[in-house]
Figure: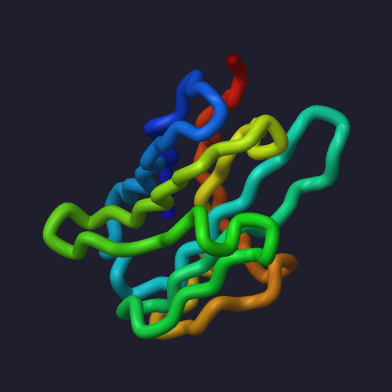
Amino acid sequence: VQLQASGGGLVQPGGSLRLSCAASGFTLDYYAIGWFRQAPGKEREGVSCISSGGDSTYVVDSVKGRFTTSRDNVKNAVYLQMHSLKHEDTAVYYCATDGTAGSSCPPAHEYFYWGQGTQVTVSS
């Protein structure tokens, strides 16, 4: 199971970015995919999750109304769309999965497969 997050960059406060999570060798739609972030000096934080099949999604309160997660099964990708970005959103963002086909969003400690992160920097 290999995941790769991409799409990060430097953006001004109030701006938008869309992160992508791509997979090698397996179909993302079968698995719950979570987005996490880690800012310097801070613990990793769960940001969002989309269940296998995309029936349910979850976002943490701090990004609710600004971030959404979605799937594109044709492209075998999961996205994190981020709007109204704030300085405090600056972090390395990762996508991850528990590797269990058909799962809903698991607790954070059950994500066993992680992609390399992508840096998001919100700065003027």
